[in-house]
Image 1 (cartoon, rainbow, N blue to C red):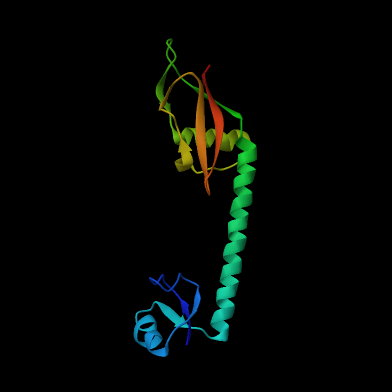
Image 2: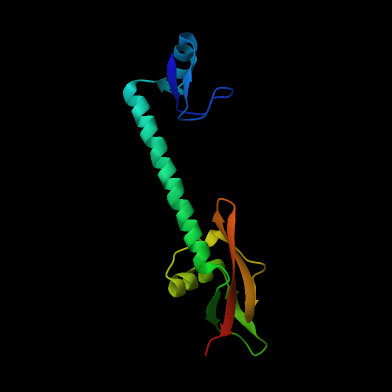
Length: 149
């Protein structure tokens, strides 16, 4: 009997896989526990469409990551903040402020959770920042913190 797995089943497969199993195993375990459904022609078509949709979505995310990498690689993002005479900031620069500066200057939205700061930015000057793009990719750029006039 052919079934389409809905959830991951140990030693059988992952969600979306079409497997041939014995009728008893399918009826008594997989179907009754909601781990699989019967593989009808309509269900197989639906699974194929879902796999194509996921592949397109994955490709779009890869294109977006590469575009973001090209925009930010080696760039310098200027942020102005108030500081004392010694160059120490009144409050520091956090991830959200960096993401907002990128959105304002480069016209691209990023997730601030992906930013890796070497330390909390509490001084004027240039600081190297890494952005995790996902899929094992990352981009390094510079944040230049200047005194607000």
